[in-house]
Image 1 (cartoon, each protein chain N blue to C red):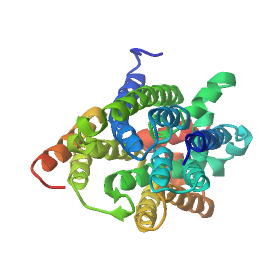
Image 2: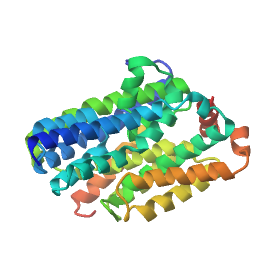
Image 3: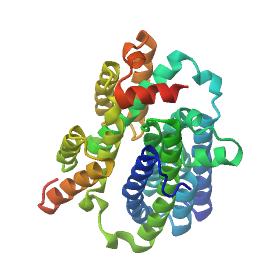
Image 4: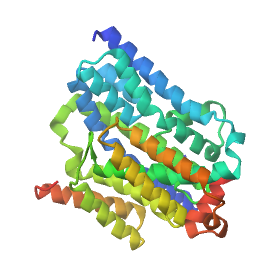
Length: 106
Length: 245
């Protein structure tokens, strides 16, 4: 790919990605006002967050793997069940994964 | 911006935004190093980070270029992965209530992390704080660390060794946790896990999240009015009622 082609590719793709983001913000508010739509929005939020947990916790490229992230998530879930604050949950998860990897696993 | 709000709910939103920004921003090192290694120079690498600003799309684009793919394939893949940001924009826009240039700026920082922190807050004021702190925080740190990674390459080490990938997963778990009280939310969460896990091996990254959202739309369409939401369920129930206005 020549330098010019590379720049055009980068700029066109960036513009397309920005247009997609802006498109969501420009959805008319009245479309989102009904009770049914608000119920769906609530459920979509749960689905998005849970899906991000699975992707961030178990995906390795196109494969599903069990590595140090899984015990780290278990520690995070335990901390959440014990009502630990957000930052502690995140730090405990990072520490668990880092410690396991330092020991040579995951 | 809101340096140290006195309201504890707002303070919690700031703290969440800052921790998510740090964990995500540090990942920029990987992108910077990989992008330069894929043959994308320093200039285009920084242009991608500053202008595209969507991790999944950026990694996909340099992946296609690194594999000697065509420009059209690179653009199509990055765009497909950016599609979920349209959904995020539609979800956060009613919470933010912004117009003009602020709306243009809000659109630019509409990503996984800023949306996740915004929708997890119990009241709209905290959602706005969470969105902007996370969006701007990730933008600044991500671009700083992309530059560092592009210049220093792999000398800085793998963010996985510091457990930052697990930190990001835990952050998303902590954000969804208070919303899992209603039974219908638990059903949707279970279906989202199955849909995401089933699709990860077969479709590009970013698509499983859209599929999980589609499942939630179907459940929302076919289910009757929600007795849980009406009776309230602690923070989750309150968040639902606030966010639907």
